[in-house]
Image (cartoon, rainbow, N blue to C red):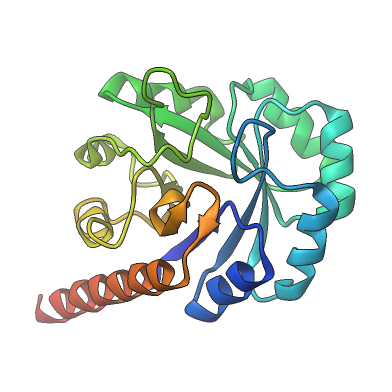
Amino acid sequence: MTLDIKICGLKTEEAVDRAVALGASHAGFIFFAKSPRNIDPSDAGRLADRIRGRAKIVAVTVNADNDDLDEIVAMLRPDILQLHGGESPDRVLTVKAVYGLPVMKAFSVREADDLKKIEPYIGIADRFLFDAKPPAGSDLPGGNGVSFDWTLMHLLDGGVDYMLSGGLNKDNVATAIELTAAPGIDVSSGVESAPGVKDRAMMEAFFEAVRKAETRIAAAGRVK
């Protein structure tokens, strides 16, 4: 079992290099002015060039219009567009058609009914990302460091490809992986010493916890 692991909200050369060295399959760059992880498209493109071909480059946007996406796509040259706002199925189709890139559509989850919201997007979005609903007063659709009831993932059809996000850190990621069997995980604040500041030791501890969980799952599979 090898998970897709996305480190999101990257802003520095050290963080980008370390994420990929540790085994990140996806590197996320956030383009949302209210986020402490917001980055200029030209800076993101420079950082992405350091790891291009070794990890998939993900552009994370929130209800971005085509003018913003034009600049982001031109500067970053992403492999995937992550839409983390209220984008409709028609908007997802338009984005895919205009930019010729796969789209990962994010959804906020608190209860079982929230998962039903993906139904109009099945067959349109290439992948889903499930994050916790923001706490009261937060302006951020993600990166709030809160999680949700992961047992809800058992309600998904087995064919739904997704990444699990929301409040993951070194202390709970193994539980999340073992409980959900998620094909991918996404972490941002869980490897930060301060909002927007990736911490090398925290990143290393996170990956160590993930690898140990993978080993346990593989061993259990062999026993069966």
